[in-house]
Image (cartoon, rainbow, N blue to C red; front, top):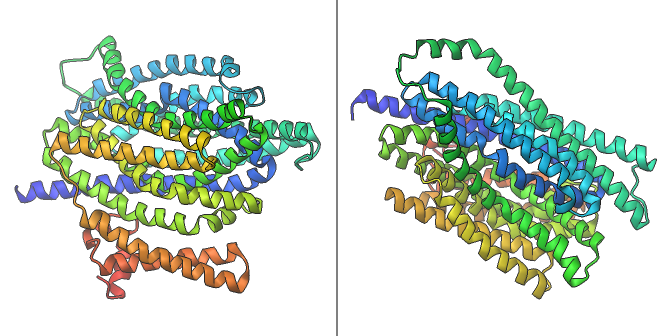
Length: 557
């Protein structure tokens, strides 16, 4: 390989990791905002309101997945292939055709969810689901715009829109929930009687659903403004396009359908376990076992709270996966199979270096982290959330792996394989969930265990599929073993610091913050001492140059 080619390859690699880093930062900021507003929201609508909202949101998610959720990844892949050969006119025609596609599909999906809400959820949750219905239509348009910019390897627009989305979601969710509950109930205090609790929770959940829609709308307006600012540049490139062949709209629609459908089916199946587990626990458990519906939905609200915390590190894989799909599509189109293998190794190692310590930290400090982020949580609910997080901790690592390998398979054209693997895992986890919930005393913890098993199966099958398709085997020592060993030292330090300070202060919130900070420092030091990361790899992380500077000052590198 020539020097120029090597320089170009390094620049491409740095560019991809930089764009992934932008999405990672935006993903984490969005998740943190989501956590910060959920604490006051929890204080307004209570765990029953969270249970109602989570139930409605699960069905909303399934319909969204089937109609619009996978649009950004699918569209970015199709358009990136055209951009790789400089077919700017055809790339823009795909964009326009995609808008028409989501207007029809998103409109039908929204109408179905609104008018069919009574068939999907219980009466108390119907208003919440109907409030969420119009968001699907808006999200489809937003998804096309995000996918268009991602195809150009520009993740900044998507990242900023995600932050704006969460800010609007936070403000409107808390404000609307407060105003609705205050208007209907006269007070935001949770009533003592069951009828009052249900009414309070329903209107609070409706307010939260309004926030979800408002966030997506604000993000759409931002992305539309970004497209408007770049419209002149886009049309100038189209005018300079000298390719003779112009794809017809029927051809494009057929291509979009062929690409989008596997993305949609894979994403739908991958996330279907949320609805399946929700139905097993909140519907079949009361119907078949006579469990109290209010208690069941309250427990589900606690589970959803814990799941929200566990989902924070998962934003990492989602962000990196989003950035590598168009990059890999272009590499495959150019026949650069070695580049694909190198990129897989880089993104998986980078993700494991971050996700493994997150999983260990959540396992060790799950209960105090819940208390810190949701201070109004009752002691018994805090104990339950802590145990649920312990059961979910390992799923973080497996979810990261399964998501990344799924995106790799989609990027190299194996779009049906992740769907098949997810389907197999879904069947197994459903059987296990039914057994654990109905035939043991694990209750909601059985759902957490089956959830972890699901990710374990999907990640294993996807990893095998990548190896079979590319002849690629992931390096083990620096990708998994060293981060795991460094994380064990980190976990022990976090536990010791937390317990020590807690004995002195008797305050979880005061104790957990220094425990987290010291844990991060211990992990960083141990990772460098074990030579688990190189200087070049460290520079690839957001603010990596600063981390390298600190490491060299401390003589760790």
